Image 1 (cartoon, helix red, strand yellow):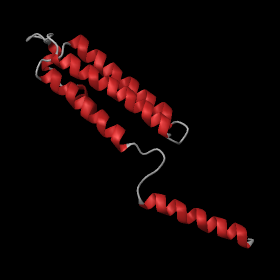
Image 2 (cartoon, helix red, strand yellow; image 1 turned 45 degrees about the vertical axis):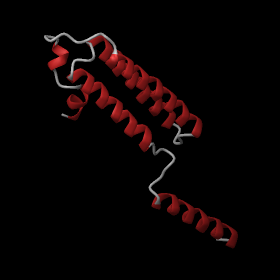
Image 3 (cartoon, helix red, strand yellow; image 1 turned 90 degrees about the horizontal axis):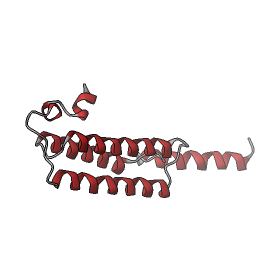
Image 4 (cartoon, rainbow, N blue to C red; image 1 turned 135 degrees about the vertical axis):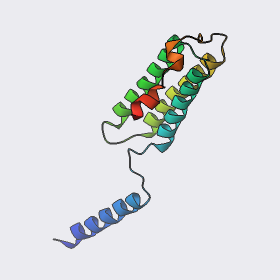
Length: 127
């Protein structure tokens, strides 16, 4: 192996170890993932206290599914770019506004509503 190739190989190994040591890869998105979890909890809480109707909850869950699909699509090439992160953040901002609006509007779930007493989607997904 010639000395230049050896030097390049050592430099690449050192850089990759440095990135690995920080636990950061191009696909890490802890803020996006944590925010998705918080938004799911807000939807669950709205269902539990009757602040969301079945129709509202279905709409909000579809928005969350769209964001998850967009995140998978953005990560498909192996890199989550700055622009893709910004796009996902905008989608989450919009979903957050919708959750706030739907949980604070005048519509309420009826007492006998089956969805009101059913386990939340995240609870069903965990089991």
